[in-house]
Every structure is written in structure tokens, then in C-alpha cells.
Length: 212
Image 1 (cartoon, rainbow, N blue to C red):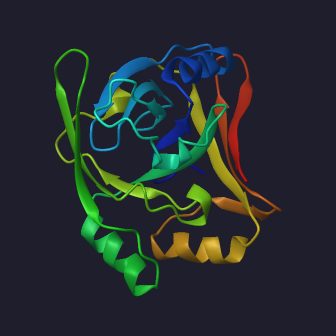
Image 2 (spheres, rainbow, N blue to C red):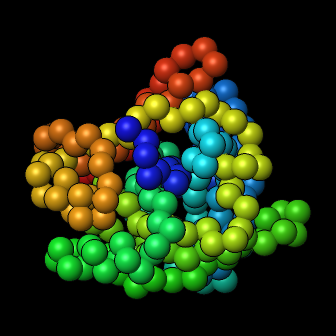
């Protein structure tokens, strides 16, 4: 079940550690993506199939502000973990309004951009990624507008086969996702966890992260 998935977010204490973790698992080395000055982060990317990618994100050591980076819980991350995902949203305002009518607040709609190492620039619109719902199992929404999609230019690491989750209250989480027109399999468990199944040339592997 991958319909609607734009990208997965793997948080790491530093980018080199995250890139090495993904390379060890998927045998593909992520390419540096760029910096996010708004949040004090930088990233690297590998493709997981047409229109889907894995973003490895970590605190930017060259960020302007010196305080800990709290986006996606990066101030608490000690090992690379799958922390959330982004869903495609061609009509961002309509989906945002639909969720609000159902009683779920996704946060403000923001503009984002980053400059790639080659000097080209990407821009997008998204719901506030700092607004975490259900420990990141509920995604933030993103619209790339007229920018090239990051999956189109980055090395393939396999193909995303399924995104599923575990949560102590799966019924509520499913209701939130359904209000956004999204569907992933969610099972009951003591702790929240996202699990991505990825098919490589040689194997089928899982990438996951458990939220305390």
C-alpha cells in the first residue's frame, strides 16, 4: 500500500550516520539534497520508485542557530529511525480543510525551498512538519508545484512495496487518515512504529522506527 506516499523521512543524529545506515541496508548511497535554513536541517536522498523517495534528515552543523534541532525529534535521536512520511497533495488547501472539518488540525500551510549542491533550486508547499500527529504516523502534506520531484534525479535504492504502522489506538489513527483520503495498514501495539517494506534487486527489507 503505497498510494499517496511522496516520501519517507529517516531521522539521524548526523547525516553521515544516516547515509551509512541506508547504504548498509539498501546498498545504495544517498546523494546530498541541500539545507533547510528554516528548520536547521540538511538532507540526503535516494529514490524508492517513480515519485517516491527516502529522505535522510539530520541537524545541519552549519545552521545559524546553535540550539538543538527539534524537528522530527532530532534532538532526541541517537540512531537512524523512520520517523514520519509525507503524502502527495495536489490540492493542499482542500485536504487541509477536510482534515480540519473532521476535527484534526494539520498546522499552517508553509512555503519551503532548498538549493541543491549543483545550484538548482526546489520549492514546495507543505503543512507544518513540526505538527506531529500520532507520533508521525499521520503524515504532513506536500505539493511540489512546478519543481522537479526529488525522486527523479536521485539514485535508486529499491522500490517501496508497503508502508504500514503500529499504534496503541489504530482506530483513531485510521479515522484521521481517512479524513485525508489516505490509507495504510495499522495494527495495535504498545508503541507507535512506522514500517516500510522495500524491495531491492536482491532482497525485501524493512526500514522502521519506534517512538517511545
